Length: 242
Image 1: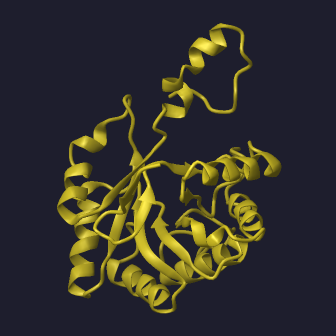
Image 2: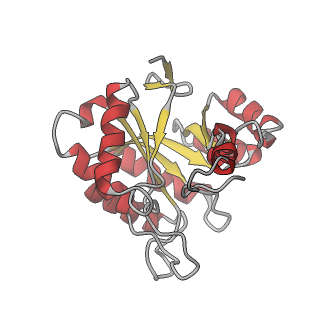
Image 3: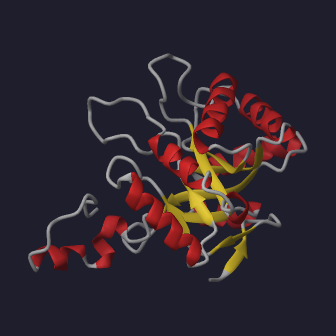
């Protein structure tokens, strides 16, 4: 396995990152644990999840369950694994019915982090990612909340997901004024069928020293030959082509 620095940090992560969005709702816990074991054995040390992952995709379900984090937490409890991985999770999506159970207010960031730590059964998150830009919360409030988590040792690095290039520029300008490291990585949709990030996002990441974590590199299985297998009579899986 090849390893690289995550953005401009001293942290080294495997070139391959294991995403766990399907853990819980599509992939059962036993299979999820086997996938985690095999990834670790193959040298993958970068595990990505989110508080909202593990929720059945249904119009009737409007909030996350944290099931993916719980599965990873129980896997980590088996011993000797937490020290070998770089653990990333996310905050922003609805995790309750209350008006403050979502987005990036200082109130929600604090509570969401505590809940993720409990589900993951760990005392710190290596990379805490904002799952989406929040147009309703000022960056001064967001960074103040994140700085406190870093000072408390609950979070080591901050990342973003689904940000535009100008969102990164705005975030970093405020972080610089506060003498804070700010964002170290951005996670975005990037594959041969979705290359919009090449226009402005990737140049922004290069300029500000952010690592890029591409999600859905096989376009939900489309680039992995899923259509050919379906045409050959294979039973369709849970991922749909995009």
